[in-house]
Every structure is written in structure tokens, then in C-alpha cells.
Image (cartoon, rainbow, N blue to C red; front, top):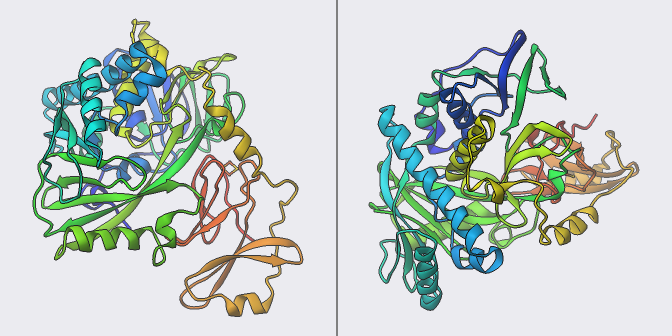
Length: 482
Ligand code: FES
């Protein structure tokens, strides 16, 4: 499972941090948001170092579908009703500015990243809703229209079109802009104390510390774990599926996503909350299987080249958190909660953070402040709190022989043992792996994910492979058995 981007771009390796350095700002996280932030800060004369735990672009950036658009699904009318005209206008404007900023950077820096200006579409079965959405989008300042016919072969009553958005190769773009930046790879942050960030090989003393990680890993202050959830979605790259103008996404829970890259159609869908049962999983054994069934219908005769999945952080009110980490950490800045719109949100974030540090007025800053209160958060906090399991931290389990022998090869399950519940996985060759199933983040019980053979946390979305190694935070350690 390797994305089309990883297959087609190798980013130059960087040294890890060795020794102690001082700089104006340090960015934790070398994904698109972190690299763009460092790029914008350096351009503004603020010396910045980036600390990446593994390889830059190696997290969610390599898993995006890389649409650069201010069209974040069918959202304009809902945002207008929930947030009012001023906030809705600023949100779409910030994202449209981000689309234009990508175009400017790519042109000015002459970046060869397969960028194409494309219209973006959200399709639906409901013509009336589409017409209203187009009308509201225009009211909010977007060049939008309702179109009755679209190119993708799905049943719908048309789509809302946002004109002149964009698509590109995210790793080629990132490799180019990172070239002149100070980046340390394989430098995981182990400790942060006021202005000092420590990694195994050295430390950075910085005036500002920017958390551009997928999920902010400092639990307190901020409590971001309780204010977001994570969602997964799946993508197939298809050959011999024809050509496509435009970028498309469907409305609603069964939404499908389409765009072209070179000779491939990138076909995505089957989104669900991490760690939760969902329709795709019930379908013939998994989300990929459900997506492949849709391919047989929509693109018969096409050939799958590769497949991959993405994980997105979602805030309760759907607006990212970008701004001061917490009141008592005025020099820490957080950037997270981009939903499926990581490319445009990364640029929004980079420009906002640049303006914060340069003390430039940014009219859109207020709507992203992380300490805004949203009543939509409360039900989520209550729900997740109820899933925490206390006091079960054992790492050794004696798995009864009958459980090991009954488990089918390639399957995982939760087993009751004398020491408590354990996670068990049997490889195709019959080797048994056991793990603790209490999430080391805040103690929720993990669930087996048959799509990707992982243990996933239904609370805040941490994920672990079947051997117990940490794949995604906010947890910071694995769940290995002993
Ligand atoms: Fe928070 Fe698992 S990710 S408890």
C-alpha cells in the first residue's frame, strides 16, 4: 500500500539534529503544513528550523489526493447558517487566497510539480440543494455555478462548480520548497519546556514553537485530543479508466472522490471514523473491497495500480485550529484539524502563522483561534470519555491455545484471557502476535481494523500495527505485548 505520490517522488534525505541550536522559530512536523510554515516564515525573515520525527512528507501529505481547493464539500450554506455571513465569508476567502498563493509560489519559484488549474465540483442527487449551494457560494465571494452535467459516471442531479482551483503532485511541490529550508529528519521531539524543544540528538531553543503535527501530542494544556476526532478514507489509482477534467467529490456519507493524475484516475471513498464499525467493513470484508466493487461498476476494464488510505483530524465545528496553543503558552502555536482539505488548509495555516509572527493584521485569523468555544464539542467529549477503560495496563497475556487455533490466518481478534483482554493476530503463516488493547494515550479500548490489519482507537484515532508499533498519534508509544 503505497500512494502514487510516494511511488513517483523521492525527497532528498536530511541529517538528524545533533547538538543544541538557537533559532527564531521551530516547526515540529515536516508535513505540508510544517514545510509551508517554515517557507513563509523564512521568506518573512524569520529564521526557522523544522523537526520531523521520520521523513518529511512521510505522514499524511503522501496520502492526500492533492486537490487544492476552497470547495470543502457541500459546506457553504451550512456554514452560513451555523456561523453567520462574516465567518463563512472569511473561511472561504482564506481558502481561496490559499489556492491563489499556491499558484503564485509555483509560478514564481518555477516549481515542476505537475500543477494543473482545474475546476472543482461537488455532486449530489438533490438539484435544489445544489442550486442553493451555488447561490450561497457566490454570495460568499466565490466564482461558483450550478452545472447539470458532469464528467464522472455517477448518478446525480448535477454539481456545484468552483472555477479555477488546482491539483498537483504534493511531494514534488514539497521537495522543491523544502530545498532551501533548515530541516532535521529522524528527530522526534521527546520533551518541550517553555522555549526548548528536545530530541534524542540535541535541542532547539526558539522564540516560537509551532506544532504542525497531524495531531498535537501535548495533552495538557490545550486538550486537543478531546476536541477532535479522526477519520479514515481510501484511495485507488486506476489505469485505463479514461481521462477526466476537473476534481470531483460527492455529497454525504457515501461520497466518492475523483481526480486525474497523469494517466491515472485517483478514485477515493469509504470514509469512516477511525476505530468505528462502518458499512464498508461489513461489505465482503473491507473498505478496499467495497471501493473495488464500485470500480467494477464505474470503471469496468480499468486496472488498479496501487491503493492507500489517509487519516484526517476533524474539529467539532469543521474549522481548523490555528493559533496560540493555550493561554499559558503564548509562544506555542498549533495548527491542526484540516479535515479532508489538508492542502488548502496547510497554506491558510502557513499564511496565518506568518502574519501572527510578523504582527501583520490578518482579517481571517479570528475564525481559526483554537480557544473558541463550540457547543458542538460537548457531545463528543462526553462520548469519548465514556470509552476510556481504567486500570488495564497489563502487557503480558497468556493466550489460551483454543483461541490461537480457532483464529483464521490473516485475522485479528480480542481474546479474553486470565490477565484481561488481549489483542491477537495470526499471520498467514500461523505466527501469533499479541498486544495490549488499552490505548496508551488515554486508556480507550482498541478495535481490530481488518482493512489494514491494525489496532485502531475509537476515541482519538491512534493506530498501531499488529505487532503493536505506533502508526498514528496522539499516542506516543506502542502497545507491544511481552
Ligand atoms: Fe486517545 Fe486512544 S487516541 S485514548
